[in-house]
Image (cartoon, rainbow, N blue to C red; front, side, top):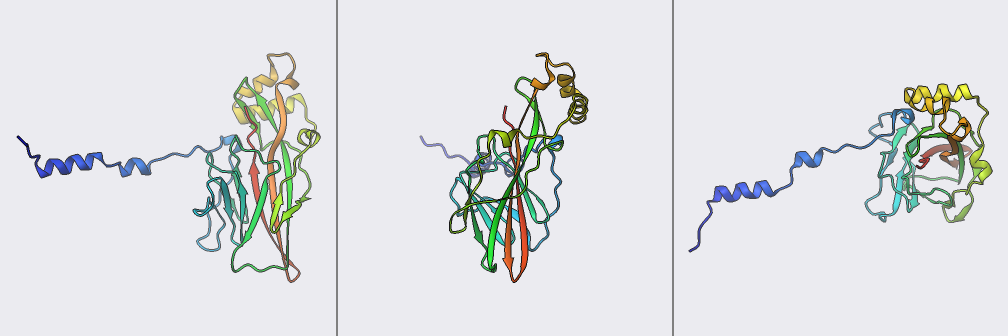
Length: 241
């Protein structure tokens, strides 16, 4: 004997099986800790710089769109943090598993962009990180060695490659005192990491931190009729665990 289910009940069962739009729209994105927080500035409605993965790009191709061109990075993504915007500069955080050394960079000009020549430059900044046996405090906004701008070599038409830094370059850092580091650690961690420098468990405060590359910058210069238009990309490098 076949039993018939009322149409109203069928409609209710169908509605319950559908995903909730409220749940789909409710998502949170993890932002960098306050110690590393970047200053966001609202984008204008026109002529804006945007940083997105282009729909037509390969899954492993990060595409950062500026108003005049797009920078493409094979093999990179920004799944952990959303890019931020400051005038003619775009900032993003590299994923922990990615490596920026020897990274290929491709530049694709927008259709209405004309130029006589273009050049790409790069620079880097070192950062100090205080270890807490796994967790760590990365002082991106404190001291650091700032390199000068270095011309990026071209490996093909509108294709460039990021420099591999030496161990000496990665360890350069301005001099500082024990008390200065304690003060900085206290300021950024409300005393938790300052205590690790003040009273290190291994007996030496200089063994409680390490220095590495915290920031890589790429500067694009477009030359037209004697004038230079500049755009900058800032890539924050996770210090690791």
